Image (cartoon, rainbow over all chains, first blue to last red; front, side, top):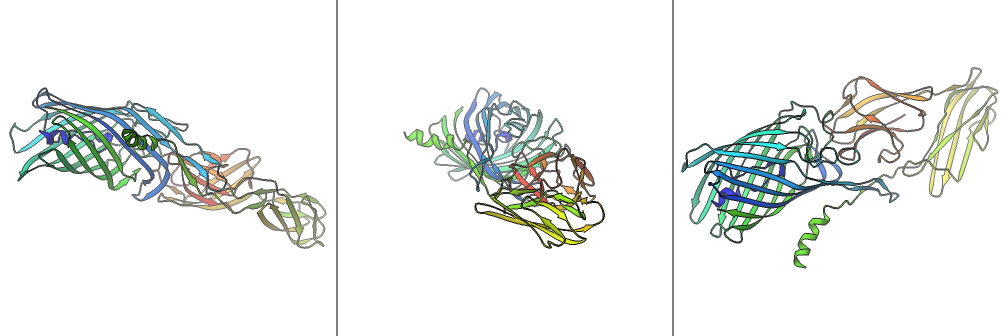
Length: 288
Length: 222
């Protein structure tokens, strides 16, 4: 089902999850090549306000795959095989001299692997699934001259998540809705997290074009070290990060199996994270 | 070519660019060895530091020393003062370099007691961002070192990663600042020892978040 694969489109690189409550049928797969990026000159502070920062960007070029081991068990992997983070030079408006050198690092990014099990009976109106993910810290958590540039958080995390989904038709338009809740157990004195969210999607043009709106919320349990005591990292990889984000995505099936997609994600609110939108473009293969 | 036009912007936004920092400050001249009293019938050599419009020390093209009362104290073109009689006097110094000009003065008593140096300064830090930062401090010269002591009303936000404290002459930039260290105390009284630094070498306590490369707050050293 197209809606299953479309739900797999990424919100943020570290919030990888696929398919809502639907699992892949045995032997079928979905594969996506994505360029995701965010560039920001401001961030949400610890009090929820926004403050400026030197312009900082992160770019992930990733492969995402999901494969049906059997009709109820789907394997998933998100692999950002190229991740780049940079900070701009700071130049004096008075003298024109560089007062702080910009830097950039390139590496593999943090990777997620997981499985999803379909809990509800096949054919149920509501589908319910549980997922387990392992976050593998393959990225660089202390890059640059002062260790502040990162392509990963350096910690091995484990996340469980439950999805409840429902599909429906409205005339010629197929649609779906999904809600989820999850818990992310983090190591190395990072705070654990609750994650919640949902999305709705609708297929137009005989299901060739899918439009999706989603909301994602991350709540830190604040049970790790403070940001000042812990990681030197900022923006995407700081400790005790929180946000409520929303995003739009459009995916277009050029053929039955091949498609292109683009997304825009921003935030209603946040804490210790970039205060600028992220974008992605991708191509995908949907092998039914 | 059409593909290139699409891909090129994506590649370029990953390049290290430039952010502009508005770091201009007023030029300042400062007497770096001020005194609170001068012993009558003795000499004292005043020294100064002239800072340009980004807070960097520069040599002035012209420097002028004056005494408010030549019957009490004389001062020559090199800042060498001589106490003549008991009383209260003001020494002024002004400097110029191209378009930069600054002046300052100190007032002290000429007495029969030995000359006394000023050994303490103080101030209050305040946030310039959304992050909490506040507290009073004292700066004291002990030998060749400085002691920076924060009082019990000090609070800093521990939600900010990589908060560092500096001394600087330009509260708008990290350039030229002296790094004291990473902040590890976020409430209450505490102190730092800053080796081989003069009491009047810097005019601001400065807080900076290294990972964000952004100023968090400052405090003028009075």
